Length: 200
Image (cartoon, rainbow, N blue to C red; front, side):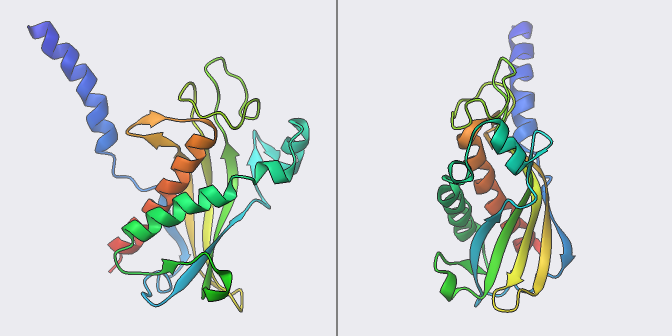
């Protein structure tokens, strides 16, 4: 009986650790949250890959090494933005809303990805080898970078949020491939809302 409880405890503690994790990988880097806290403001989401590196290589160089076009690389962007936007709309208690129509927007929510990783497979295969697979083996997908809130017409920067390394997870399970990337965008929307909702 004692052995059973020890095994049960060993199984539960990691789960509690994951669920209880409260560290937000998103923080205000510069500027103020005034635009994000404006209930009348509308934002349009863009993803900026101009400074992105994968496996330590500039994106263009990495794409060339895996024989992938930029069009292929970006073909899931609309779905990534959808995951991000839906979570934002669900979780933003009092602040900027998002729109899919750029003309309606007051601000650009520009997600600048500095490091991007689809994740490794169980055998240690590199992230680009089958980049669109959505399993749970091996190391998970991850990104890091910044999110700029920019006035649409003037391109004046309202604030920058820093995004520390984020992994694609569901209930503590790490996902690689596009499934993991989608989870990251979902969590990024949620974590930005936490920053805004927490601010007085």
